[in-house]
Structure formats: structure tokens, C-alpha cells
Image 1 (cartoon, rainbow, N blue to C red):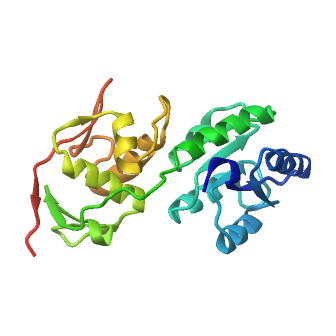
Image 2 (image 1 turned 90 degrees about the vertical axis):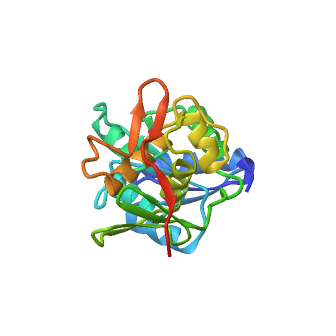
Length: 239
């Protein structure tokens, strides 16, 4: 995929928005497909490969936030949310659910185009290298080859591809402060942007799986002004 021929799914119940937007993006060299609701979007995503989704939050039936959660759980493409809400709550929730960016309606198509290009530039050109070995930290064992972590009490969590890569990076560099830019480069091989929230979202989800209290983490610590540090000793797990 190149940025200029990326395949974009536009999900918006307002025809007067999705159709002109589709035409505009096509003129910019993109391939586009449209969906009027979440059901059509799910069908399109199941039948085709998309590089990015432009998703309206306020839709009848299943709303955009619910669809955003599902797309992220399926390791789907990056998402830019469209919202007419003046309140910030939906935008914050959307970012926490895994959206890569958002734009408030009414918007200038040129601004959306710039945001689309910025998100697509951050998409990895090649998968990050994952060490296929099991390693122990605290009461957990991380099996990178299985994209899973197991607790000594028998608890097991499956990891998304992004979570697996992020945890691998931390285990490779325990007790080292890593900035957001470094984590973006190490996990996705992409040029980091100053205000990118992708790493924060991934860390929040990973904390919910490995921390006893995600609000008071003991493994993934926030270094204010510096980034994040994985505060645990790491050892190879015996077979």
C-alpha cells in the first residue's frame, strides 16, 4: 500500500456527507467504499481489506463508538472518528477505544485529508520482529509466539498483535525509560508524531491485562515528561 492508493471505508449515516467525501477522496487518489451504518460497515470489513476507516460516532442503531471497539478488538485498520458533539467525552472515549484521531463536524475536507495522510504515514510498512520465546516477569509468563500471557494462578490473557509487540519491546528493555516516539518506532517501525495517542491507548489496554490495579501500576510505570518504564526483572521461562 502507498498513501495515495490506500483503501478507505467511510461510515456515516448522512448521505450528504459520505458521498461528497467519497468523491473528494477519490479525486485525491484514494480508493473508497461507503457504509450507511454499522451493519454495512461490518459486512464491508469482513469482505474486503481496508487501510483506514473514517467513522461517524452518532449513527442510528449501533453507534460509532461500539463499532470502533469491535474494529479494534479484531485488529482492524486505523480509525479517524467524526463527531458533531461539542462535549469532549465521546472523543476521549473514542481514543481510549483505539481510535487514531478525530475531527469535529463540520470539518474542512482538506483538514480530514491531512489527518488521513498523517495516520497512514504511521502505519507500519513491515511487521516488527518478535522474539519467539517465553519470558517471565513477576508472576507472569509472556509467550510471544502464542501472543499470550499466563499467570501462576492459571489466569491466561490473549494479546492483540499490537499488545504483543509492545510487551516484547518492554521485556527487551526492562527498567529503561522509553519515550512515546521510541515506543512507536520500536513497535511499529513508523515515524512518530508528537501528539500521537496510539501508545497511550495500547499501554492502557496492556495494563488492564497484567496489572492488579491498572490505576496503580507496578509493571508499566509512567515517567512524567519521559515516557514509560517496565519495572520488573525479566528471565527466560523454563519449559
